[in-house]
Amino acid sequence: MTNYGRRRNGADPRGVFPVSLGCPKNLVDTEVMAGMLATSGYRLTLDEDSASFYLINTCAFLPAAREEAYTAIRDAVRWKKRRPGRRIVVTGCLPEKFRDGSLSQRFPQVDIWLRVDAIPQLAAVLDGAPAPECGGEPVFLCDHTMPRLLLTMPHVAYLKVADGCDNRCAYCSIPGIRGGLRSRSVESVLVEARQLLEGGVRELVVVAQDITAYGQDRPTAGESAGGLIRALDALDGDFRLRLLYTHPAHYTADFIDAVAGCRHVTPYLDIPLQHINDRILRAMGRKVGRADVEKLLQTLRERIPGLVLRTTFIAGLPGETEAEFAELETFMREQRFERCGVFAFSPEPGTPAARMPDQVPGEVAAERAAALMALQQEIMCERHQEWIGRVDRVLIDAVSGSRAFGRGTADAPDIDNRVVISRGGRLKVGNFYDIVITAADAYEMRGEWKAGTDGCAAIRR
Image (cartoon, rainbow, N blue to C red):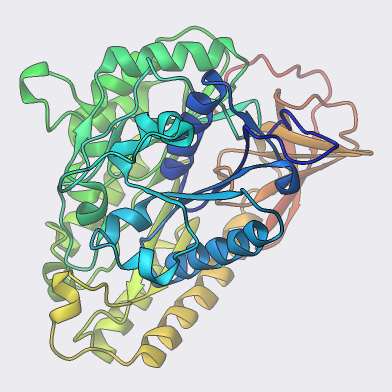
């Protein structure tokens, strides 16, 4: 983020210090708020002491995320006490989850609580207008008409194509916080994508709660996830598309065809599977069984050469037996996912899973999750060894001295690992290069630049 409007003597009365918590989808909302503030005469700053407003866009998905938000608010309270006239603004998922006003009692020092639907009125509220009253679940959806100030690396941008979710999994509070699925039009997405590419973005990371459900809320529009990906792929430029957050129940032949056939789509898919035991999947409300999952994974690997699969699992759902956990562990050994995260089940108030009988003790769930992550570390180390000798297309994120740091096929920004390129001091940030992978461990790959490549060739291996 660029430092705007820093004042050496005292605070800038229109200076805003932003803090963005949570997932990339939340970051897009923060970027939209930053754009709205910038076009309304406010100035964003990295120096909290020069700011008059402390803006926190929160996540509330899990207890750990809420604790992170509470910590950020306590930091803001300490900041506020150091100089009269400072104001704290808290937006996003935390005010959505606690619509009963209980947060105001817990943190009376916060001056403004703004729910998601109030995002368009943020600048007016900072100007002194009252915070708007919001109804039930949010309906706000950003689009290409809204100003947006990128807070990522300049060559990377998240492209949010939808918000909300209709899946209503038994353990998940997201639909209650973010509302039901609402998709942007293809044209709106394309306009923003063109703007981002013209501004120098080389990697567009397509995000939504569920990309594969895109367009299902707009049946008369005739729009689908496959059609959207093809439309993005047809845009001019040397760039790559990376797809995050898909649901195994919503994969269609058309979507698979699009991913397999589009030249800009990097062969990387994020498919949170959550479990593999049939009874657990039914209890989760996942709408697929083990046979469906195994068939999908086989199809994807057959259709998409060099595919990298990222997934997540939940250990310790209420009623999960040792045998069901062992089935999940065996499945992970068999599938050898390139990327995987594991969460210990945590009962979210208001969700069906929180009311299920036979709750697994928290320490048992944590032990199971840790065992799966230890297994995944072994798998990743083995999978990385398979890359040695390959040539991968790597986007350079940073150069320091004689080394360059980038991400190839297997690595999404801020989520996965990195490729370290020795003798890469001449490489340019924001360009693609063909890199020979020479060594690897569980956390990163190391490689060397194939001299003569200039970052302009096709992205797919």
